[in-house]
Length: 251
Image (cartoon, rainbow, N blue to C red; front, side):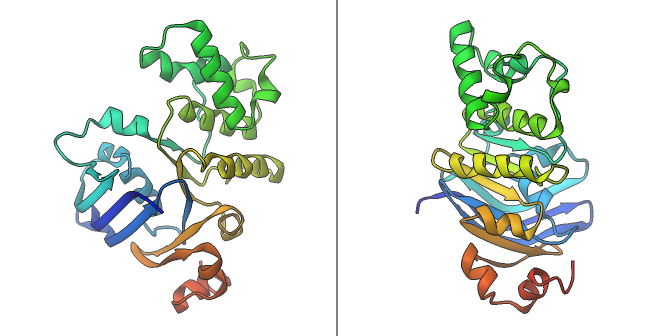
C-alpha cells in the first residue's frame, strides 16, 4: 500500500524530558492505525506532532523528520494552518463550539471561503452522514450543539473535522467517556472513513484496536516496541512486553 506518513528517527522533548525516543514508523494510506500502550508512553504527543499541535506547548522541541505525502511537515514551505486542515484532530472530550449544530459543521468551510448556502448545507449533510449522525439531527440543525448527548457531541466533532475534507484524521481516545452504543457508531464511522482518508487512533482499549485496526503499534515509555498487522501482533506478538501488556500483566 502507499505510504501516507513516514516518521524517521523522531525524538521529542519537553525541556530536558524525552517523551518519544528515536521513533521510525510508516503509516499507510486508506488504513486505520491504532497506537496503543499505557499512560505516559508518548502516544498523545505523537498524535499531536503529526499536525504540529504540539508546537503550542512551551519548551517543546523535536529531532528527526515527519513526512506527509513525501513532504516535511517541519519544512519552511509547510503552512501550519494548511497542515491542520489536511490532518484533523479529534480529542477524547467532545468540544462542540457554542453555536448551532449546523454552524459547528459549517464554521470551518466558511472560514475557508465557502459562501453558498446550498454548498454549505451539502457539506454539513455529507459530514454528518459520514459521522453517522445525520439521521439523528437533520430536523434540528438550528439547535445548540450542547443539547446533544455525549456520544452525539463526539460524532459532531468528527463531522466538524470531516467538513474540511482532511486527508488524515487523528483521534485521541475518542470513545473514552462513551457508552457501548455510541462507541459502536463511532467505530463504524471510522471503518467506513478509511476508504477516503487515513485514520490514526489512540484507542480506548486494546479490544477497540482489535475491532477496527488494519495495523497497530505498541508504545511503552516513549519507545515503539512493536508494529504490524493487527491480527498478527495480537495473536503472536514478537516482544514479551507487547504480550504482557495485551494479556493484562501490566498497564
